[in-house]
Length: 129
Image 1 (cartoon, rainbow, N blue to C red):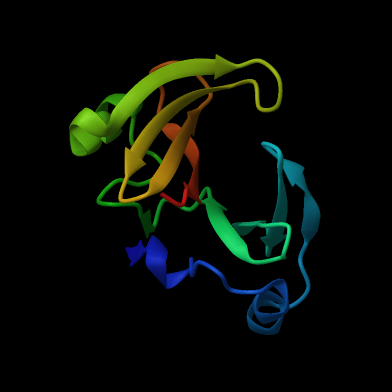
Image 2: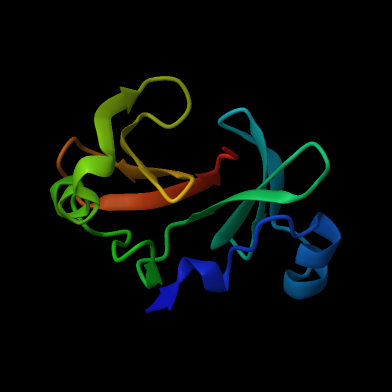
């Protein structure tokens, strides 16, 4: 299992991402921010200056503070314990259940198709303090 920090470096430029991964397979907006996806597996949220501020994946082999995609929200919550905020249904963009956590300056969103079903993807956004 790979740690998310192997993929996610804050402040890396879009040009550096393209140099490392090749041309993006998708370049759009999601959750109010620019999202560039490479190889349909790894996505990066970019600032207005085209610098990495967030990361997304559906890969269950990526370790997110000892949690990973495929765990249930209950399993993820047992790892993050007090960092959990709440679970809600996103009626607008994803039509998914989302559980939000806060850890070490990151907002972490785990997505599930059903309220207590295994998670299908994760988004990490770094929020400056």
